Length: 128
Image 1 (cartoon, rainbow, N blue to C red):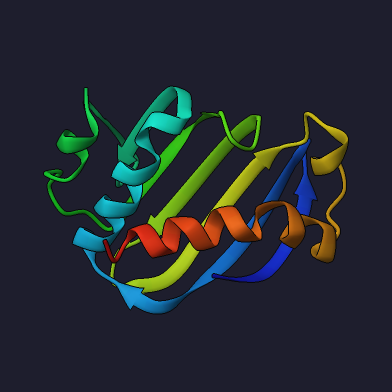
Image 2: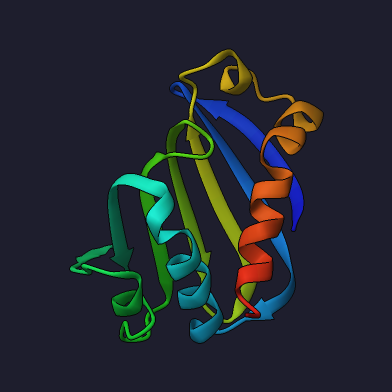
C-alpha cells in the first residue's frame, strides 16, 4: 500500500493510502476478517451504520456497502485506530490517535515507517 499523505487534526493523524489495485467488497471483507482478532473494543460499520458481528466469519458475510470501517484499540499498533475501506476503489483512509510519541507528529517518512508494513499486510490478506 502506498501512503499518499498524512496530517494532524485534533490529536489524530489522518492519512490516505492507495491499494495496488481497486478492490471489491469480498476483498475488503477478507481484510477486515484478517485483522478482526487484533483489536480490543472492535466496532465495524458499513455505510456509517454499526454492524453486529461476533466472529471474523461473520465479517465475510456482510451485505455489500459503499464503505467498511474497522475501529478500536489496535493490539499491534497499540493505539486507537480507524481504517476505512471504500468499495470498488483503491482508496483507504486511516486515522490513528496521537497517544504516543510515535503518532504525535504528521511526518510522512516516520508515519510510513510506523504503519507501512501493517497496511501492506492488510492488503495482502485481501488475496488469501
